[in-house]
Image (cartoon, rainbow, N blue to C red; front, side):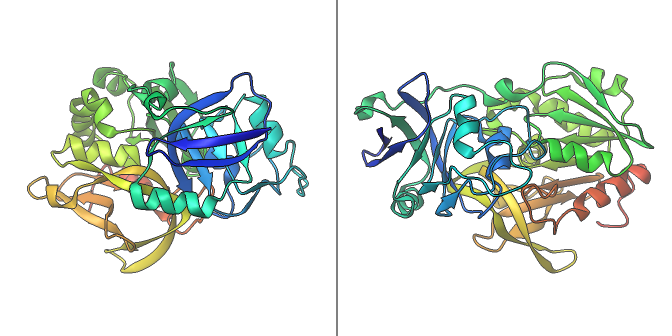
Amino acid sequence: MRGMLKLSSGEVFEGKWKTNTTFEEAFGEVVFYTGMTGFQEVLTDPSYKDQIVVFTYPLIGNYGINEADFESAMPHVAGVIVYEANEEVFHYQAKYSLKQYLEKWNIPLLDEIDTRALVRKIRDQGSMPAVISKHIVSQSEIILKDNCKVEEVSTSEITKLGEGDHHVVVVDFGFKHSIVASLLARNCEVTIVPYNTSFDAIVALKPDGILLSNGPGNPKDVSEELTKINKLVHKYPTLGICLGHQLTALALGADTAKLTFGHRGANHPVCDLVTNHVFMSSQNHSYVVDKDSLFGTGLNTRFYNLHDQSVEGLTHDTLPLRTVQFHPEANPGPSDSEYIFDEFIDLVKNNGRVATYA
């Protein structure tokens, strides 16, 4: 069956509707991902909530979906666009094909799309609302819900995992499972709490450190949490990842802005100004911290992006704080920046003293 992707700017891309879904259209913000692998992690990353993801690599799905690499219990994308979706899988761990997995969750998959032309359009005009449909849709119908996506992906209850020498509370704005796995591998006891858990309730858990997780959407959609975050970073060693990085910056007086088409892929070069080393990073975000807004906040740029010089991570003049815009947990890869977790654990071990890496 033929299907189409229509952009809010008016362009239409025709392809083949691959999945049997119970509906004939799906709305979302259309974005693109540049990695050659990692489609399973992308589909199940809560940061992609309600987005239509275009995979730039031409063949997607050849190694299938396994039971080990999920970043959450379910996929969060609104739809998937590829040039060619491989229905045969060639990996010993594979349990589903890409088509079978998306079909299980009632998510549309379109292939035979000219993804190169589509991505060029997004690069020129920016990420935008779009619809995947089996029929013609007018531009006036392409309107996205103005909702707080963090509310839809955050846990509703407190969960404790592991045993260890260091107790880290993960404030869940839409966390990836591999972030928690990285903490557990470093001898941590982890408590995951809903994003809107009060400051007093977190203090009552007696953490040694705080991790502010990744998550979807505009950081200003959860501005009611900024006062709490400000208190947390002043009381505990803190690591902010992706959305957590942006929220920390807002809480300390900086500002954020939206990129034209965002950073999504596993091949973004980042420079560490402390070590003067360049590494490749996994990223997924639309918003960045405005570097011109850092003056007077006590925040300092530690990492920056070599493509567009945007802020990729921060430290603070006096607080035991690390934030990164990229994903140091390395799923779907690469693993170059995993040392960020080691620095955070050192801060926790040293009760927040910042002499080692400031």
